[in-house]
Image 1 (cartoon, rainbow, N blue to C red):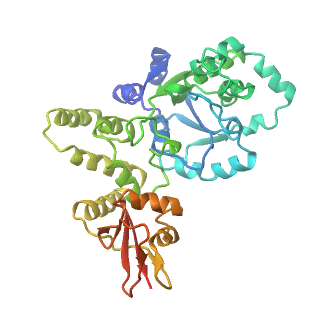
Image 2 (image 1 turned 90 degrees about the vertical axis):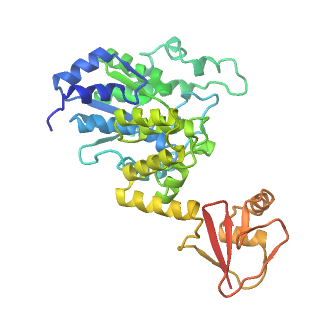
Image 3 (image 1 turned 30 degrees about the vertical axis):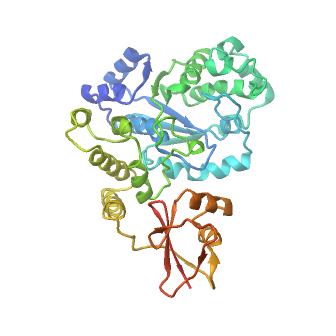
Length: 401
């Protein structure tokens, strides 16, 4: 594939959704030269789920792919056993090989929603680490000083923390990630800006092994749907790549207005010029932010599913939230006789447990045939046509005899 050296595309590659480039002038010259580059991005399968935050560097990797460069996706099945400590105040839970193998099963399919799998080079760093002897590993770690690793603020902050001490495995993580760059001969490595020192480690180790140092590109961390913390499943503020198109659309509609321009920039193909125009209309209050949010939700679903799916998700959302219509495809839950509402909520899957059911009722979050349930001891008496139970705005179940 011919390398695209269009100046405008190179400028967007180097600036859109980019936090920092090291070394920018060097990378710019290489991109202008038409030289095919190897662009590395690594991800650890510490969970079976990827979310929109993961797509920020993946979308940047796709930009390099579209320009004709070789994208290299590293699945960190070895580094996941430690877990990336970047930005953390405590050690991650150690995962077993079995847990990691289970988690990584869906990663390629999820990454394939963004990347061109036909040209993608997929590597697992277990290829080189699982067969490495203790002597080889000790030789590798001897190339780096403890002082260099402790330059990381998150590491130095935990040196005297008795509750969340820094362990030797965590110190090894940057070295392992850096060695990945040596093994795949990376010209460029992508990562979140909290990964900066890990990415710099790749440059240091490449120099030690006589390779040309990779350039590095950091991207912003995507804030979650709460607008406060970075997107993470553990924070309950994520939009998963495995969410249905309807769920993805609805969750996007729930984000704060303050995230709109950031999400358009990092998660869509809408041009920078059009995003500037959208920003101006919002500043001048010429448009309802809800309408802009609907456009954003459509663009995100379209990029991960299709235009048709985005249209369907939008239609279903409008029917449910704007026209206040009940969905047609409501799941049914059958019961043989009258039952306490708490048991019905658990049995139908509306609540995870009896305590969760009570919490939902006490918070006014459950309706029976359109009326808010206030009585924790309510007995549900099913009829032939069923009674409709609703949790929040999106979850329905019809209880039938």
